[in-house]
Image (cartoon, rainbow over all chains, first blue to last red; front, side, top):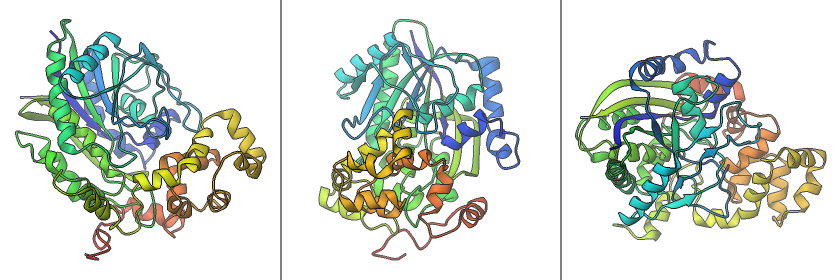
Length: 280
Length: 134
C-alpha cells in the first residue's frame, strides 16, 4: 500500500532557481537563504528519499494562458519538460511523472467529489522545478518521480483554504488505496508573504508568516478558515500562494510534528519559508 | 459562502496600491496578457524586439494598452487588466529580473527598493485597507 510519509513546504521563488543555475548560492546575499535547506537535503539523501512526490504548485502563466484556468489540475503524463518562461528554460532535468499513481489519484478524487482537471501534456515552470532544485541540488536526473498538482492562485477567486485542506485529506485517502508499496511525500510550495505589483510591492509580514508556520505544526486546523482577504491584506497580493501549503497539511492527517523549520527575508521580493513535517 | 460575491469583490478593491486580478480585470486585459504570453517563444521574442509596434499591431488591444506596453509603464498595464505573471514575459524579454521590474512600480530606485527588502521589506502597517487606512 502507498503511504504519505512526510510533507515539505517551501517557497518556490524563481530567483532561487536562477541563483542555483548560475552558481551564486555561496554569495553573501544568497548564503542564508540556501543554508536552511542543507538539513533537508541531507535528510532526504540519507534516510528519506521518497519514491514519488505529489508536488503542489501553481503555474505562472507558463503552461496555462488565459484560455484555460483549471482550479485544480493533476499532471498524468509520463514526463514534463521545464518550460521557457521568457529567460529560456532552466537547465534542469526533465521531470519524470508517475502516470499510474496520477490517474489513480484523479479517479479517486473525482469520485470523492473533487472535480480535478486531468492534464496529459504540460510544461512545468519555476513553481515546480525550484523546489526540486532546493531539495535535490543539481543532479543529472531527479531522484524520484513527481505528480504535479497545479492550483490556480492567479485569477480570482482561487480555491478557499478550507477547500485546499479538504483536497489534501482526500489525497491522503486516495494514496492509501493505491496498491503498490510506495513512500510518498507531498510538497506544498509558494509564498510566503510577497507582493509583486503596484506601489505596495515589497510587502513582507514576518510575524504573520511565522504564525502561519506555527499552525502547520500539531493538531490545530485553524488555518483552513483564513479568508482570501486576510492573505491579501497581511501577506501581499502574491501571499495567497500559501493556500497551497494547506493541501500538503491536509494530506498529513490530524496531527503533525516538525522535523525542520527555516525562514528568511529577503529572497528577491519575497519572504521564504520552509518546513519538513511528518504525520504523527 | 458566508458573504455575497459583491461583498467579496468589494473587499478585494479595498487594498492600497494593489490591483487584485479579478474576473473584471481578466476580461479587460485578456488580449494584453495573451500578447505577453506569446513572448514565451524565443522566435516571437526576436520578432518583438525587431519591431515592437508592428508586433503589437497583430493583437486586438486598445491603444492605451499598447502605449502602456511600449512605455513599460507596469502600473498602467496593471490598471488596464494586465497580470504580473503574464507581464513578466515582457520584462524578461527586456532582460530584467522581477526585482528590477517590480521596483519600477513603487516609485523607488532599484537600489532603494533592494535596501528596503534587505531591511525586512515593506511593513503592512498603514497599507492594509483604503477604507480604514489602518
